[in-house]
Amino acid sequence: MPLTTSSPSLLEGSVSGHLQRLALPMVWGILAVMSFNVVDTYFVSQLGSAPLAAMSFTFPVVMAINSFAIGLGAGTSSAVARAYGAGDVRQVRRLVTDASVLALLVSLVITAIGLLTIRPLFSLLGAGPEMLPLIADYMVPWYLGTIFVIVPTIALSALRAIGNSALTGRIMVGVALFNLILDPILIFGLLGFPRLELQGAAIATVTVRTLSFFMALYFLIRREHLMAAPQWHLGSLLESWRRVLAVGLPAVLTNVIIPMASGVMVALVAVHGEDAVAGLGVALRIEPLALIVFYALSAVIGPFMGQNAGAGKIDRLRETVTVLARFCLILGAGLAILLFFIGEPIAHLFSQSAEVVAVAVAYLSLVPLSYAGYGFVMSANAAFNGLGQPLPATLISFLRVLGVYLPLAWLGNRLWGMTGLFAATAAANLLLGALSWWWLRHNLRQRCAAVTSTPHLSAN
Picture 1 (tube, rainbow, N blue to C red):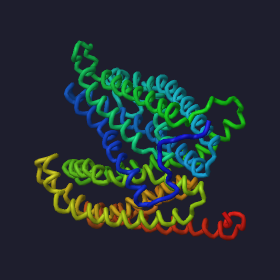
Picture 2 (picture 1 turned 180 degrees about the vertical axis):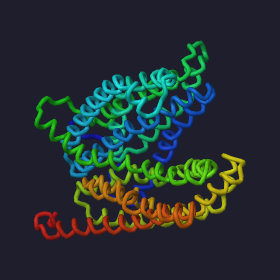
Picture 3 (picture 1 turned 45 degrees about the vertical axis):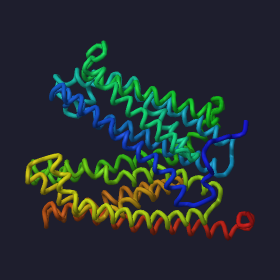
Picture 4 (picture 1 turned 135 degrees about the horizontal axis):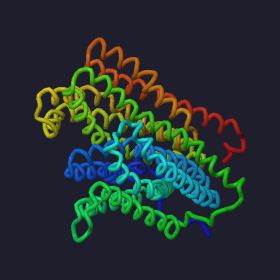
């Protein structure tokens, strides 16, 4: 059966137009995903401090598993997009199917290990004996539903890889709205349901993730025809997994390094007192909303670069870098100006403490000056993954945190306090943004030179 898809080709037409079309639905989808933790935290907080603390203990584990799922999704998206751009129909179906099998197996392993290690793992994370039963109430159903977290991530990544981000965004929004409805019903026992409290929050999450699982598989199989029968030839299966993991595993490392920077910043700010930590917390709640367009752009730039790389469209790849740089500069400048003027009134929505607001305003006045650089770092990382070259993305992320941010943050904090610490964040973003821009342009120049020097390729 030929590969029929409802997604317009990314290999021709306006580069900026395609990126805008792809990114816009992802803005709403990412907002929806962000709402999951907010909604769960709000309703669980109504149960008291103990259930809220128990759920807080689960965040690092949940984030780690989500990071692994996102990494596998990036690997799947990169491999599928390049095969799709090259017009290799059989390979597209093979990759999507084999990546889904891999996601299923990984899910089962995580479920088994997770269920067996709840007590020792969370004791290691600092949970006391009185907290472990509550944590188990949440994590047992969550672990049992791991398959419905990881497999849909791979499926939605495959849909984005063929350029269908609109469908991905709609599924993400629908799932988030269902979670908003189901959470209070199961947590508080509304509409005749039993009152499940913290366990209800986990069951609601698993239920809505199950919905996304079946929706994603339906569209992959019935609408986009991207699935084939599972194969039992071990060599071919391992080759597909190798192609996915070649980008997927470095992408996992890249995702893990990002929250490390926030953790380091919190630790350094903590020496200035509780109000300083609270003020930073306010700023770090506001920042993701400001950066959401950059997140959406980074979610779609990988498939765009992958398809055009697979098709050998080097000129379009180089044009994309120019479009990205211009967009990041304009949006970054706009966000810096906007937050300079509205940072204080927004901070007052979270706290009435003058000390807390002062720290938040200091952050939102200084760090956004570097959002253009940070936005390009995110886009360049996704672009390298899309090109099937994850090493630069991983090195850029590690260099940003370990090579630039950490020494500058230590020095800035020592010399100028929190102002120096926030300046270090801005400097790291700007320096690595410039490096990302140079590295991506250099990579594409090398690709262009390789194509030009190969007669049978240049003839195409």
